Amino acid sequence: MTQSLYILNGPNLNMLGRRETDIYGDVTLEAIARSCTRRAGTHGFDVAFHQSNDEGELVDLIHEAGAKGAGIVLNAGAYTHTSVALLDALRAVDLPTVEVHLSNIFRREEFRRHSFVSQAAVGVISGLGPIGYELAIDALAAHIGIASA
Image (cartoon, rainbow, N blue to C red; front, side, top):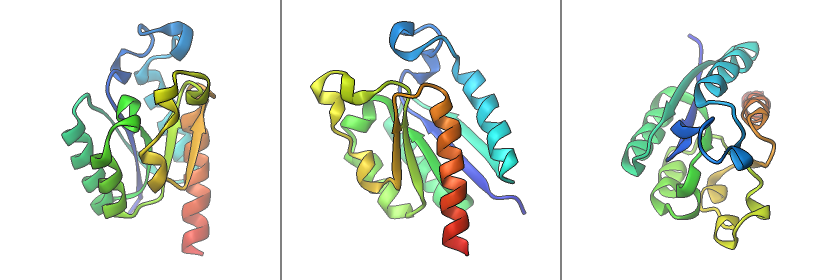
């Protein structure tokens, strides 16, 4: 049975390609989903790709990943900086997680420089645009391979 990587996206990421393109670029979330599926396939993983503007739904998806997945790539959007609930869910499922941000959060407003998610992540990729998702998949695949060796 093929293992799945859960790629979870938080609020407003459904607006990629139209929203603040000077910050986030013009690539859509659908295009990111396609590239993630291709990249995960090169490592033998399936992808469960989701986006939600609802914090509770993201918590539920993290729980689902804990039961069915091998790892998580999480772009929590604004919830990165506010959600103890996402942090607690990530800690509860104890799956390797890579946090991703399209923009460099450290070159933006001060409030964006703190991440609750990072406390449960094996790594953070910030500021590399859409390729950050593919790099996160590569990192998860390596981490999972090392953990199972």
